[in-house]
Length: 68
Length: 249
Ligand SMILES: Cc1ncc(C[n+]2csc(CCOP(=O)(O)OP(=O)(O)O)c2C)c(N)n1
Ligand code: SF4
Image 1 (cartoon, rainbow over the protein chains, first blue to last red):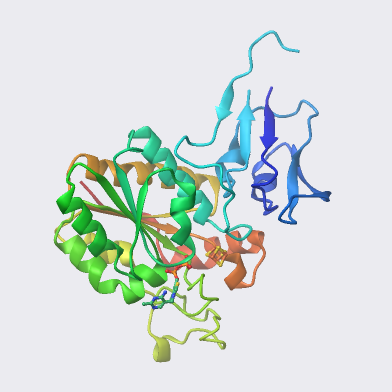
Image 2 (cartoon, rainbow over the protein chains, first blue to last red):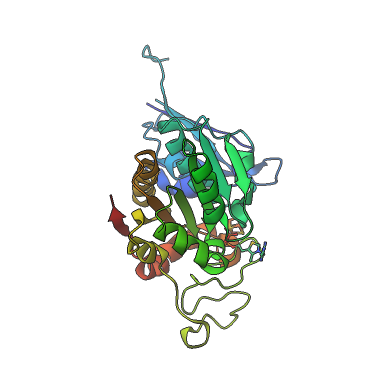
């Protein structure tokens, strides 16, 4: 089982991580904005994450860290 | 709670500073910075590296990597890097350049640095446009691509053809390594990561000049969403800029 942490101030909401995750554990939280005004990626902690880290590998802003 | 201790399986490279990137959403400059940072970490080069930065959106690399850096005038990074390397042979010297920087104003410097076999590594971000200045045509712009200076689309008859730098550099005898990779999907990024390491290895092992060209998105100046940009890379950029290793020591 895995877990993803989002460094919210680094995230720009590009959505690349959301497409990379095969089990839909990440989503764009439209209600949450960082200091730069971007909607940020959020992790859905419903125990579906395998900790594969594909999301972090494609993140252009190095905003994700993954634990397994 | 699981009884097994949790392990970090993806962490930020050590040499990458905490500063938040200034790049636009979906821009691949940040990813290329990370790949460079991973290679710097893996070859243990943080204290011996000197980054020579061209002019373009990558110009603030010194804010993001905890290494020595030097800014070069537009296009001149390979000449500056050659000077630094020749006077400091123990340093690991790389340039970081966009396609406007490397393939337009800096064409002379890149060709001759490669031809002289300068022991430097060139990180070349090809996003087929002048990003920083607002989306003018670059020599790498694709036929038909709309830019602020080709509003009806680039016409090869009037504006010339895209320039394939990885292939051109590969035919020069001083070149040890030349490859083109793409940042548009996971497979591309994994290949890019290996190629970045190889381009670093070329210098570490004193094999000669090394260049890695990374196809990258500039969603802002392409007037696209990040997702549309990835699709454009797959549908239009890769056919014009075939991926591959063109020279490998
Ligand atoms: C001698 C000189 N001419 C022109 C410029 C203006 N200028 C700044 S950045 C740039 C192009 C940058 O494009 P590119 O190298 O593709 O980098 P990108 O921003 O797309 O990453 C130009 C023409 C300059 N700074 N110096
Ligand atoms: S203008 Fe283009 S190259 Fe520059 S930061 Fe924005 S997306 Fe990246």
